Length: 227
Image 1 (cartoon, one colour):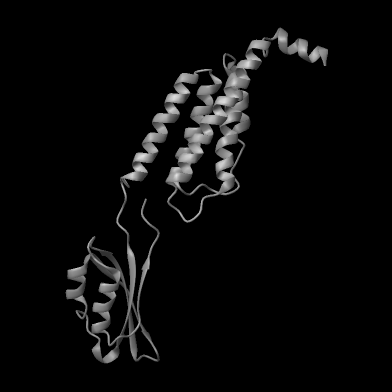
Image 2 (spheres, one colour):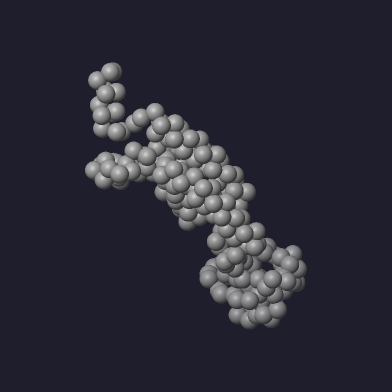
């Protein structure tokens, strides 16, 4: 043990001052990553976020702060560590681009803390969190929702332009995707992809369609919200 300590000290790997600064860097990285993950939870727009993902951001920020302290000024160690990190793979792919941005956000804060640029790390956390919240608050860049409308029409009422005037009044775009027969050929099922106008109420649209299709089944399904 004494030989190992002597090795580290003789190679300037650690010393008392550096150890305390590293501990301070880890503590600051921990606090800032908690702020980042809190903003992530506030701005999450899916059905349910992963607790493991939140924990990962925190742990990675703290670990990276130590790694940056180790590799700073030693290019050989840096290349070795990055070679090791390149072998790491996530068990499941990160499908949301915003989740990747939060991972990178946490890594950058951890790296900045590891370089002992605490003031810059705090500024980065505050400013980055503020940007994420503003984008969420004002719903910036949100695409329009596409809905799948399925309408069952009796065979005797079937004609191509039956719902055109309704679509013109209530939707911005509509496109026929599929036509199929049901109920032993006595019914026709139309499937449309539509984008409703902002003022359109779903119930009002469905009621108007039911007036035309003899009050048969009509369904409206929302696809995943565009991000």
